Length: 187
Ligand code: SF4
Ligand code: SF4
Image 1: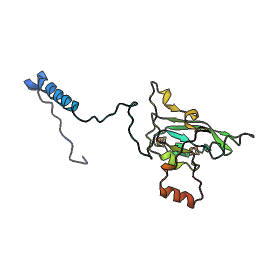
Image 2: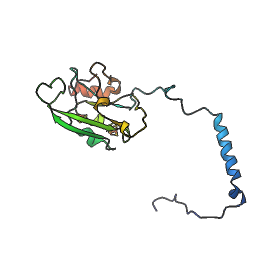
Image 3: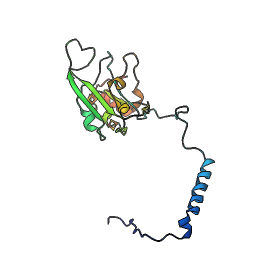
Image 4: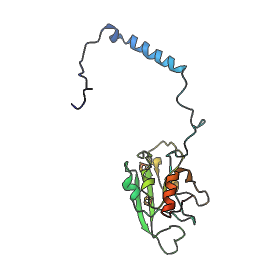
C-alpha cells in the first residue's frame, strides 16, 4: 500500500429509508432544481460559440510553401512523436514535373489523422522539421460515424488560394529561434 487513502468496503444491510430510496430521490431532485437557477456552464453550440484562445489547439493544417507546394516530406517524425498514435501516412517519390506540387523529393501520398484518437497535445507540430503541420483554432466538427473522423489530405492540406495563418501560434521565443536558425516563418 503506497498511500493510506484506501478504504475497506463493508457490505452493510440497508436500513428502511435506504431501501425505499425516497430520501435519495428527494435529495437528487433538490440538486437538479438548484442547478436550474444556477448560471449554465454550457453554451448552445453551434448557435453560440465561445471565444477561444489564439493558440487554441484545434484541427490541424498541412501547410504549403510560398509557391504553393506541400511542405510535408513524409519523414514520419510527427507520427513517431504522437502519443495517441493518431497519425498514419504513406510516402511516395515525387515525379518529374511535380515540383510545383511537392516541395521535396519525397511527399505524403496519404496522410491521415484519426481525430477520435488525437488528444490535441501539439507534439506533432513541435516534432515537424519542415513547418508542415500546425494545429489551428478551428474546431473538429461532429459526425455520426467513426470514418468521418479520419481526416485525410483533402481536409488537412490548406487550399492554395485560402491559406491558414498560423503566425499567432508562434511565441516571440519561437520566432526568435527561427530567426536565429534562418527558418522562414510560414504564413
Ligand atoms: S496533436 Fe498530439 S495527439 Fe493529436 S495528432 Fe498531434 S501529436 Fe498526435
Ligand atoms: S508533417 Fe512534418 S513531421 Fe510529419 S511527416 Fe510531414 S514533414 Fe514529417
